[in-house]
Each structure stands twice: as structure tokens, then as C-alpha cells.
Image (cartoon, rainbow, N blue to C red):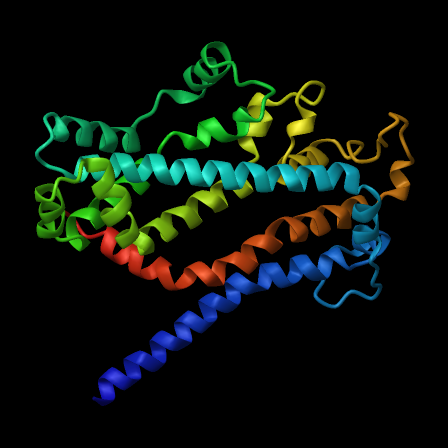
Length: 295
């Protein structure tokens, strides 16, 4: 009993230290966004800056036409992409969980194979740009992430196998229900933990994605589809991006809190995730645990 209690104390201490180490960068990020830009350039970021300023957030407010549009585009892409990805992943995983389907083992092998090997960036870029023609469209931000993640498919498939009784599905088939009715009325509603888990991971992936914008959106023809992460990456690459007003004239770069503006935009970018995550946390551990069981 004493040994078990000691183990719990040590485990809690380790987890508290790990949580603190994960929290410190976010705290520094917020403090840096409220630091005076000139002081930050001269002295670097600190938990206790000598000069505070809200100029970075005022600049974001003044440039909201650009940043606000990117924010709205991020929400649209995340919602559409996450919904479509969940449906495709769940339907595919439900088919794989039915061992009576011919070729099931072959398809399962192909799913696992894609976790180890892929076609590479060149082939992927050619497929999306040359064949699907998604370059400089909103689909450039949705379709590449929409292609089902093998890890998510396996999680959902294992959840269907281990957590939904076969007898329940067979009873529905005997009553005359087809596979789509069984999926949407029985299997999918009973899979809230794993659906919430996969949805959270997929949503975070869409929200934080900047690579697709870098690959498939040009600043001249596709800037209207920039998400908040693409804007932030563009700022890092070219600080003059937000210094251009809608009329095309360029304001003085020195008037822009360039260093702290990056931090402020990052804070604005992660804020919705911090709000949404607690509502999905209760499903997260259960979904990963049950979905990770080999079926």
C-alpha cells in the first residue's frame, strides 16, 4: 500500500513537471505579445519585460481586413475539412471492420503500407496541381488533408471491432437495415469517443496547417484564401506583407511592431483551440485507449 502511494506521488510530480514545461512556452508567448517591440528587439523576450505595450494587438485590429479574412478562412477550412474527413474516415473504417467483405485484408494492408511509404512531394504536388487543379483555390487547403490519415482509420476501425457488439449489428441486418442505415443509426452514434478524438486531431491539423498554403497558393492569385497560419508564415518570410494596405501602398515597416506582431498573431491563432480542447478532453483518452486495442 505504501509503495503504491509513493508511486502515485512520484507519478503526479512527474506529470505536474511535464504540464509546467508544456505551459511555460504559452505563457512566454502571451507575455511576448504584450512586450514593447523596441525593447524586445534590443533585449529579447523575457517573462518580466521592463516595457509593456499593446501595440501588436492594436496593429492586428488596424489590419483586421487582412488578418480577419484569414481568420474566417481558417474557420471555414477547419469546419469543412474536419467534417468531411470524419465522414470519409468513419465510413472507410466501418467497411474495414466488416471482415466478411472480399479483399478486406488487402485493403487493410494498403492502409498500413501508406503509413510507412508515400509517393513523395513531387508526385503529390503534380497530382493535386496538374490533375485535380486545386492550385489557388480553397480546395488546396482542404483536399490534401482530406485524404484519410491511416492512423485515424486504424483507430476508428479498431474501435468498431472492439466496442460495438457484432450481435447488435447482426440484429439490425436481420430487421432489414442496410449497411448505411446500420452505420448512421447504430455504429456512428455509439462511436462518440473515437469520433471526437479523431475530429480533434484532424481539426487541429487543419487549423495549424500552413504547408498546403505554401505549396498550392501564390501570393498574387491565391492570397484571398490565406489562413491565419499561412499569414503568420508569410510574415516570417516577408515582413512587408502586412505593411501593405488594401490600396497597395506600403507603410513604414518601422511603424509595424514586427517582432511582437508575430507573437500576437500566434496567440490569436491558438486561442480557439484552447477554448475547444477542454470540451473534447473527456473523449480523448477513452477514444485513444479503446481505438488503440488491436482488433
